[in-house]
Image (cartoon, rainbow, N blue to C red; front, side, top):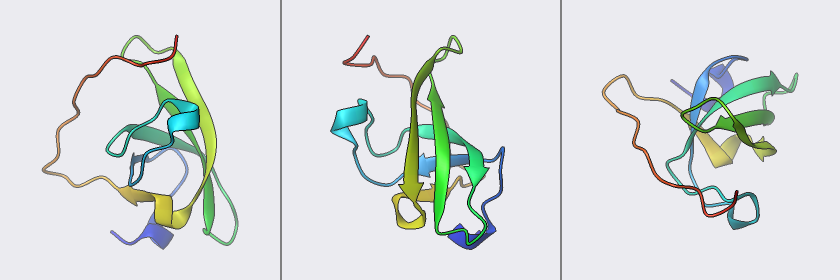
Amino acid sequence: MKDNMIKEHERVVLTAALPEAGLEAGDVGTVVHAYADKRAYEVEFLTLTGRTAAVVTLEAAQVRAVNRREITHARELETA
């Protein structure tokens, strides 16, 4: 799936770390808003208990669609 095919409410994978948000490459988030040109997205990252860890605006190159053969992985956040 190409980046320009990512839609709202789809899960995406972060392709580069965002230390200021406490996020690492490989973290999985949900698109809560796709800008009309599909060049940027608002993505929410949740803890496994459903708490919002971060909501960030990302350029299309900073995320990718999930692959059907991938599995999520748990890690502890550095920030509370």
